[in-house]
Image (cartoon, rainbow, N blue to C red):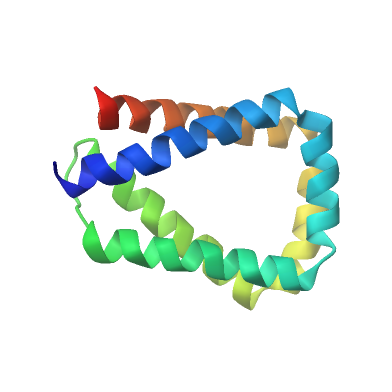
Length: 127
């Protein structure tokens, strides 16, 4: 089994569950997000928790071919950027986060993204 499949098997179901949870528990997650964005420590820790797996994915799977493994590589880079933004720009992120949490359509779009990416990677990882 290659690294693309293994990483897809980890990321895919996780993203699927997050997307499903977002739609089932929309208001609860919106409230949780409001509480999260108030804590500088949680934002910083979330940055570290995104940055490390992002680095791991990119270090072990930096594959730039126009096939499905590119989605895994791009996800790794997305985690790196998300980690950097949370660690370095946490104050600005708090302002942006409050605006994003106030926009239900943005949150639903994030849910659609999670479901789509999770479904795609789960399919590639398991079938």
